[in-house]
Structures are given as C-alpha cells and as structure tokens.
Length: 304
Image 1 (cartoon, rainbow, N blue to C red):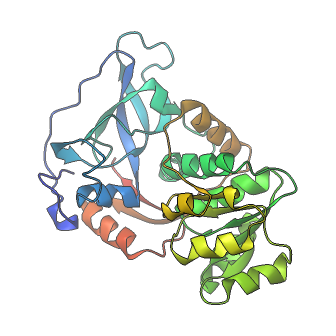
Image 2 (cartoon, rainbow, N blue to C red):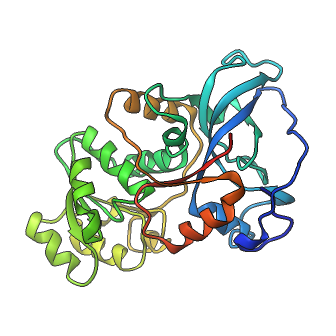
C-alpha cells in the first residue's frame, strides 16, 4: 500500500513496488501481518511533517510479524526461515510494513513469541514497547497503585498486563462495555467522564502512585489531582504532561525489550486482543476504523 502524497485513507493505493534493498546488519522479512496504529494515518496525513523526514512515495506501517527471507552482510543473529516480529521505525518514513517484503535492521526485531499466531504477534511491538517504556519512565513496581487511562486500547491493555505482572494494582479507565474485559486483564475498571477523580478515590482514597496516559486532555488534569507525586505521570498523548511536572514520551525501538515482551507472551503473562483484521488491500478501511477510536486492543492487516 502506497501514498504518493500526504492525505487520508482514500490516498492509499495498492501497487507493485521495488523489493527493498537489504543493507549490512539488516534482514529481509516476508510480511505475514502488519499492525495498524494511529501514528500510521497521522504520518500519512502530514501531521508529523515537522518532525519526521518523509520520502515519497511512502509505504506506511511500523509493526510487523513475518519470516526472514534473507540476511544482509554481517548478520549472525538470524537465518532465513526464522520467525520474527518488530517495531520498524527507521530514520525516515519510506519503506514500511504494509507490504509483502520489508527490510529491517536486527536492532529493530526479536524472535516472534511461539505462543502467538501471526495476527496477534503483529499487535505487540509498537503498543507493547510503548506500554513497557511508559511504566519504566514512572518506575512502576510491586505493591504500587497505577492508573491507566484508556486501559482497553492497544497500549493501555498491554500496560495493564505488564503492570499486573510487576505486582502492581491497576485501576483502568474505559467505557462501561469494556469493564469485563479489563477485569479479565487483572484491572479494576473505572468509567470515563465527569466525576472520574471521585470514582478513583472510591477505590484508592489516598490517590495513586503512578499514572499512564494514552488519552490526553482531561486525563492529564485528573492524574495530577490523583497522584501523590506529579512527576510520576507519563503521557504519549499530551505534551502538557511536561508542564504539570510529569513526562511526555515517544516509544523507542529496542530489541531487548521486544525479546522480554516475547518471553512474557510465551509465559502467559501477556495477551493481545485483536479487534479487527483486514486484508492488505483494505488498509484504507482499517485506517477509517482506527480514526474512529474506541478500539478494544489492536487492528491488524493480513498481508499473506
């Protein structure tokens, strides 16, 4: 799927494209599935033009699960036939994962979890790394209470499970129809909207130790009211977190962290809920659904 210029879902076109070159330290991956993330259509619309170098035409997509087709010079970590997954954010936007083949440096990938099929494996990398690194930024540990905003979403649902695995108590915000889902993940659900602070205090009268924000806006303000220490607020949705004493962040590729997430999945500590699966040629519709918000878990493209 290719974008010739910035635009919305209607600008995506299916076409033949040259197979990517494989540089030293890289592998060529035959893509099985690709995760769909809000950043994909935000880049496509030009919203991140001020911060990301873009070379048109572009193939969108950063999440991938697939099979190593061949390896470049000086690659000893992988061989043809290995099953891998990864967060393939490169130095510029051009050759992404909405394709039959994609090249990737070994620092961007890890062995695919054995217990996850292709569809669910593609939902882990970007969201899982974001969740893990957010929890790291605010040092969530055993015995602490953490508030996760949008806990039923792609990042939030994984952050919930990782925090639970660390021995934390999780209060998760979500719409009422997602409350049972959050309970399955080990969280105590709290409804969105007016009165959120009071509802959280009914469960944690002294407030919370840390807050993970995937929403922004009022969620940042509510977190400040509830936190014992405002520096333990982390957001990927609102830069105002910095202004109120917390931290806003952007996920970084990390093969070691990916390997840890893979091990958690294989240990039964991390599950991925896939909301919808679309064929590659339906990528435009996948973007439209993602733009509507309210997705439980992940949206995935089936490429092969």
